[in-house]
Image 1 (cartoon, protein in one colour):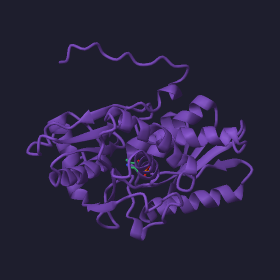
Image 2 (cartoon, protein in one colour):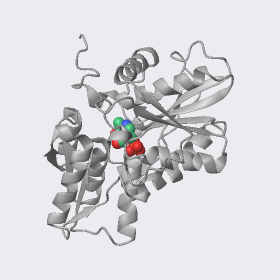
Image 3 (cartoon, helix red, strand yellow):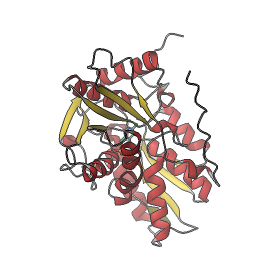
Length: 313
Ligand SMILES: Cc1ncc(COP(=O)(O)O)c(C=O)c1O
């Protein structure tokens, strides 16, 4: 235990003021064997009030839409989501008084659907075989049937998504590493995290390497991540932001997520396992460096999924 006083959480008017400002945690055990001057850190986004990285872009998309008159009381928020963005919409909609309708594939985790329902949002189920692309197409259809009722902020094509990360996640990583970050690793769902943080880090220092993580096959078990070659490519995706794109298998990502729980006390989701698997591969090739990987969410969202379902209790 350190004998420093704990940092007192900041006071706020609503829970929304607590979005962002997440801890940066250094990995100390899964990194054994790396050279002493190589550090690997996790940006722990499960500390956001909605439990994931998605609180940041969804709040920013809503605030920007209110500011420019696209969103006002009486409108219903509609979008497609594999779950975490849905939780962010449901939470923020509850605070601000907007009804929320979310289209998600039937195979989205049970925990996420229940959390969304707990915040009072409505879920529309799309074909599980069509994955997140099926949810995108059904959300478009629902919107076009009654365009006056719905505001579809469309996280895949909305620049407020990556701007949230450019203005918050990126500067936080620069500050928390004292500007020493040399590599940034993130998976791609909408690509908002990778594009926003990547652009911000490159504006600070072109030499920082931005590394994208991609499932190694189209049919994978990494919720939140896209296999781009076989998916609808998000409008905000900009391949020039990442210096490299590395594949990761579902098995390796699960194994790393389990190691993070058991060896580091970090109960994380499978896309965090994927990012750390790649971060460690990069770190092994360095003699010196500060690698930061994004941890989009916590493990409690996956208790009924293959990641944790077969735990012996
Ligand atoms: C668990 C998880 N990992 C990774 C991502 C990818 O983040 P982004 O949409 O910023 O690319 C998401 C996005 O929804 C997610 O829910």
